[in-house]
Image (cartoon, rainbow over all chains, first blue to last red; front, side):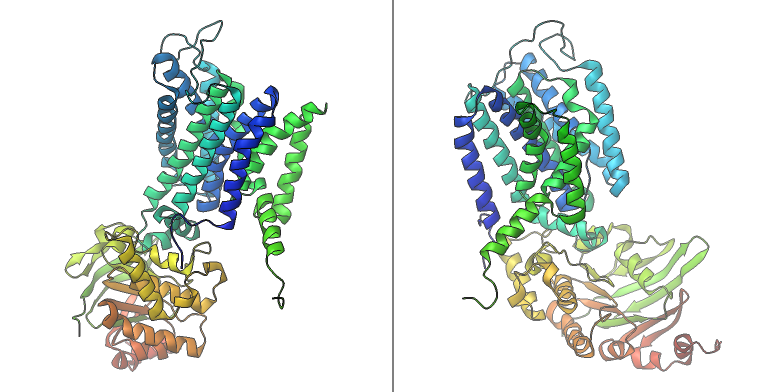
Length: 330
Length: 243
């Protein structure tokens, strides 16, 4: 009986192979436009993994994830212009600061469930949207907000990844680490506690689970992933625009995580593909990128009607059906 | 024989708006297995919810081994050795049987290997060793109930409460469950309280029984004596009130 933390499941193996392929192949074949699209998609994959895990493991709907990315991006930019820390330090601090914000966001979550929780998180996203559009993102100015008119000061990227190709690899590596962080939690005590909380909070409490602690913890991890992805997005672009972090974007990212399949690693990848790569593809083909919204709607209806585990669920179920021998065959 | 823990319910009062759900209930359980019976709406589950912390009482105490547990939040009570099962067995579908048991031990100090060994031992006791790696979603109703029982037995419990554990089980399954409940005290040292409508199960496993009706205690004592009490019969059969 192998129940170790490090066992490799077929789904996990496919995820690691996918990450390795993306790491080696994508930066080698993409041009500068697609490099930027893929880097952004990798950042949003990490952010989507945060909402997907909260929904899949705890049944909690968070509609603030893109707003939390904005916080991570803001902190990373602010630290970049304020101190001479290397990017890695800024990345860690931005992720931690967003994790703390995630904990603060968890306060109402401890009292609310379902639709009410979703509404509270949406309100938080709305508040962040107003803050970002009012104060903008730091670009090298002075004062607390660090905003100046005119050209933006340079942003220090990671020392390991100074070229766009290397940076895409860096983001894919970080996103993979994010997935591994979630999986490590799922396989240990927090994962067991979350599964029981999702089943019934009363049952979880009766089993000695501190429901408040573990719900807060989950919000913290979702915040950590959002903060890191926001900091990476800031490093990728060198500056951030408030339009990226509007509250409808958080709703869209959550909906796409459901369409993709929140229970599987592939779900957030599909979500980010639909969110970032599909509109870019439509642009390349000369089709209005707003068509993507129609496709999102169809995808959501598809998920609601026929695919409770999302597109990823359908793919993994089909793969399982293909690899499992029919009864009676040896 | 391990000395049983003493569970004392003292003047527990619960009101839901104008309804008195538990009217100053008192009972001191000293036998290894006690029962709580009563017609629907008598307050049995409410009493269990007070003991486990899901309902706040307006007054009274529940003392386990000299310690009033009502001042602690539910998960702390579990840490103190309180266990309970629910009318509908609460097994997480996406955890394996083994993980569903292990979750009860996660908050305890100790080596992971020892916790795993204990979970495996209790799964063996309930007869689910060969199903340990099956996800909860694939279990039958009886297997889910057995997983629940195994979860209640791990982690050095002091008091285990089963809320209608035989609900939905066949006669054979109820008998097997009764055997398990009878073995709990010798195996873990825990005291057990069983709520059930199945009087046969109660009379078989419970040494002493508390009978509730409309939130009032109408009898408490040795099970056979309690079941023969005319007031208890009246409450169950709905005959005229006997003063």
